[in-house]
Image (cartoon, rainbow, N blue to C red):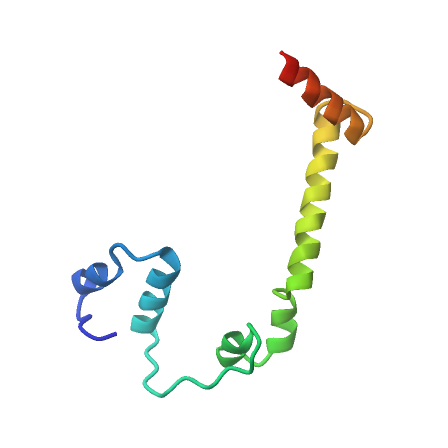
Length: 105
């Protein structure tokens, strides 16, 4: 990045930025790239392919939107099962009944 010669300059550059923008600025200081960036291929993984390490397909499967949705669903299901066990009820209907009783109180 231009004008970043020491830590104070870097702090001035990232002060007040959103976190994702600050990370990109720090990354650009640590790993400068002077050539023009390659054109994207129209998918959200083009930047990841650009910075990949040779095992791109295997690594990127972890971040595929369908995989992320499945992970989120699995975590939700596990949270429901944990809540059922913790509250000592038989099923999700028992949790709903317990929640309704708490709202009445």
